[in-house]
Image (cartoon, rainbow, N blue to C red; front, side, top):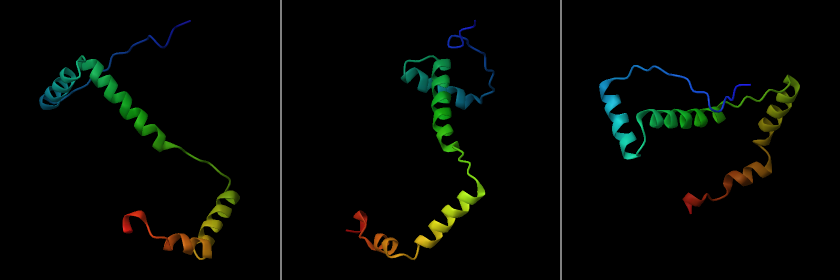
Length: 91
């Protein structure tokens, strides 16, 4: 059995000289190697991107029901009261 937590792979990147220098300076400030800095940055970017990609799948009937509820709530008294509340930034 292969321990996938310790397996590493090589990534080849073409980087402009100015970006290379910027990465080197930032890595040095954080006392990391260029590779460690780039891996950490890429991992954080990937973790930030994935939550935004949540896909919720529902049947058409359920979707239509929710849409009807949302559309009809715009005119009800509770919604109007909510929209007329003084916002903290307006106080």
